[in-house]
Structures are given as structure tokens and as C-alpha cells.
Length: 507
Figure 1 (tube, one colour):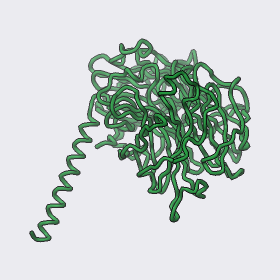
Figure 2 (tube, rainbow, N blue to C red):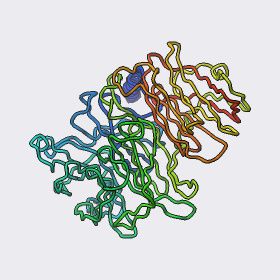
Figure 3 (cartoon, rainbow, N blue to C red):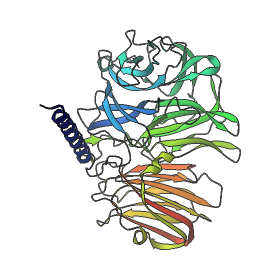
């Protein structure tokens, strides 16, 4: 066989395999209600995002994963990577259950200084810190069945080796002892672990990621306590030259709209103790369907947040196909000040703009019953709607299909609340708490208003007033929503409106 013919055959077969892979992916991500601009696994169960780290231009995303069912089971760390926070490449499973237990939530750091001594030949180790959950000890009635372990990678996250000395932090007898979020505290030249311990946070420190010392506790008498505390995170954000520490604590149940939610606290942290500015309970997202959210490590001053887009009230029951669970849109976090209080605001990462396709731009719209679809045309996939007004008044935005199914998003001036109502959104009878109207306070004190909606096949994320108020909501229509209309009983005038149809990340 000639070398030219041989090379032709190689190219042919590689091209054919690639085409088959692309076709299989297209088919896998073309199911009813499948997210088109949010990450979801091809098959199986997904919940908490884990181990998120940015290294060598790649965003690593690990997540709680059970590949053998769409119902929660023995947890693995699934794995995906991205260079732009938008398009994701599925990777092989990173961590499997073992004799110490299931692989529960945790974090990953780039050990730049090789404090762990895992690095060899100048290679920087990525070190994953996670909870081992031992089901045998749990069934035996013990309280110390969760403990912290580590694994490391010397090939930029492609393969992982568990540390032979696991576990590195034993359980002192607390049933819920999990979800370590680790960061490098430069001022003290040490690693800080923020750990969820039943209904509060415990801080630990380490010089090498292997030996850990208890520093302090926080939260027994502050914050929301409707359920167990989970998936914490701590990091500083800058506000006009002032460093403010943000402590994120996920809670289940006890959220503002029932079930799972993400609360946060603002204050000072000295490497030993977190001291809050006040005792206010604040929520990063008021919707029912953002949970277990944490940030990527190793991103410098930029803090990028990602959550699980579901709620433990019905996560095992949602009417999807061969997969269950998805991630929210990645969001940039920042500090704002309202009166004398600091708050955290969030907006979709600007990288998402690469998906913008057909654009409709309008201005000075007097709203009573405005058919936006007449201007934009019907849409059959993800979309982004942004609008601003000179003065906020009562209004609603209705997403609908031809089956009289709808989701209504709006603002009620009497209560000063934004809302999302999915009571008539399609499949709603799989759980009694699902078909509801959910509300969130308007935090902005400005007269003018702006709003962004990120719309996918089965979800909407609301970012109001530059992200001071955020809501995430999932739904399951029997036919995709393709119509948008805007209603107002007041003389509501839209200053500017922009509607973008968006491309799927899986095409």
C-alpha cells in the first residue's frame, strides 16, 4: 500500500469517527428539555459542582456524578473542561468510589509552591481535597462516617492518584462533616480549609495539604438554620480599594423559596477567624433552583461562581430523559453598597456573548400588552432578553408555547418584589411543591431598572438591577417556549430592549 493511500485511510477513519462522535453528541443533547447553554452530563445523575480550578488557560469542572442511574447513588467526580466557560468538553471520570467510601464534594487547588511535595520534575500538582463518605459506617449507626481525603494530578487534571495516607482529616464525631473548600492564605503562608460541620462552619489550616489544624468555628447562632449547612466557600472581593471577605454557605432545606439555597455573609478574615459585619441573612440567589454554588480557584481577583440548577425537594423526580441535573450559567461576583450595607451582586460571565446570534434591538416602547415575538420571530432554543426602563413599574414577561403553557416573570410594585411563576409551565405534577410562584426582594433603591433573562429550553435565570437580585428557575414544558410578550397595567415605558437568539454549545 502506498504511503499516500495509507495516510488517506487514516484521515478517512479519523474523520468518520469524529463525525460519528459529533452526531452522537448532537443526538444526546437534542432531547426534550435538555439544556442547550448550560453544562449537563450526557447521561446519568449530576448534582454539586466540585473541584473547580483554573490552570494553564483551562477551566476544570468536576461534579457530583452517578453514571449508572438518573437517581442519586454512589458518588463519583465527573469531569469536564473549557477554555471559555461556555463550551465544555466531557472528560473521563476523575475519581471513583473506593474502600473509604463515596467521593463527595470538595475543591481543587494548584499547589504552585509544591507544599504537598507531590510535584515531580518541576510539574505543578493539582490537588483535590474531597469528602470520603463511608456508607457501611453510616448504616452501622456511626457518626464519624465522613472524613477528608486528597488526590493529585501531575498532568493538568487528566489523571488522578489518591494519596496513600488518606484520610488526611478525621471526623471528630459529627454526622455532617464535609465539602472542604481550600484556598491559599498568602498572609499566613498556609492553606485554609472551610468545612461544613452540621449547622456551622469550621476553619482548618495546613502547611502542606496533608496535616490539618482546627482554627475556629462560625455560624452556630447566625444565618439561616432551616437545614444542614453544605458546600461553603470563602474569598476576598475588592470594593473601592477595601478588601471584603465573602463567606458562602449553602443550606438545605431552609431557602427563601423552600428547599435548597445559597446564603452568604460579609466580613473580615485574618486567617484564623471570620468576623461578620452584621447578622443579616443574605441570599446569593432567591430562586428555588440554584444550589451548592461555589467559585473557581486560581482565578486571581476575578471570582466566578457556578451552582447546581435544581432543588433537593424534587431533584430525583424531575421529568428528564437519560440524564438529571445541570449547572447554572457561570457568574461573575462583585461587591456593591446599598445605603450603609455591602451586598454581593452577580451577572452572567461576558464570555457567554459568543453565543449571541440573531439580534433585535428596540427602544422607547410603551407597554400594555406588547407582542415581542412579532418583532423577533418565534425562537426555538436558548435566548437572552435584556431591557431597561426610566422608572420601574408593574410589569410581566410571559414565555409561552402553543399548548397554553407558560412561565411568567415580573415585578410587583406593591410588595417591591420580582417574581417567577411556573405554576402553568407544563409538567408540574411530579412533586407538590413545584408548581408555585416564587418571589425575591428588589434590593436596588434606584428609580430606574434593568433586567436580563437567560432563557434555555427548561430554565430561566433572572438578573435584575445589574445582578443585585438574582433568581434561577427550572421548568418542563411539553413543547418548547417560542413566544415572548410583555404586559403592564401601568404606563410602563421600556427605554431599551435587546433580544438575542443564542447558539447551542453542543452543536
